[in-house]
Image 1 (cartoon, rainbow, N blue to C red):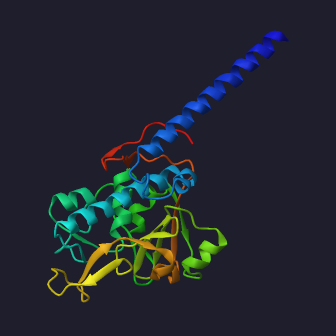
Image 2: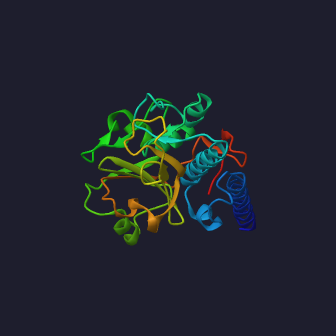
Length: 258
């Protein structure tokens, strides 16, 4: 009886030790993360590991936008590969001296950065509300996330009120794609972002939009009223292959538990 109790006690101690180690690894993951300090600690604490990695990538993209804009670079809205390759990763886009973006590109950038999709893969919500390129990306995305077809019956703000929206979710609408970061913030890199008209901008966009920011407060963003046709949500147990560390570097995610 005493031996059994001793073994049981050792087992419990080892389990607690393992749990503590996993918790420490996850805290290190949160602290060594580009999203740290750019969104609330509460958001990072409650978000899934996948969402944290996506947020870290998005906040890195925003930082590059701000840095390069301060240096005089114009980031234009474009749907044409003439102005920005549509199937490039973010790093390769910038390294190639191309500074164009549309609403769908950041979700694909982040999924490539995280190791969910291969570079060259992309997706978006088409004009009919269909999931463009679903056949090409479905098997890759479903390893990390759940894809839900919603058929445009409700607006984003209605889904949020119902509690069916989580940080890191990607939404596809009729001719539009956007990311919900959490903290009442969207990552909005289309005409839903903050931009101004610049007639000298090198783009086919009729509005000649040049971006100032891709991080938008929910209440002042048109995404709040978009009817949602598809929602992509990270699985709680998904661990990304890569994330952006505090320096913005794309690094392998340590083995961790939450």
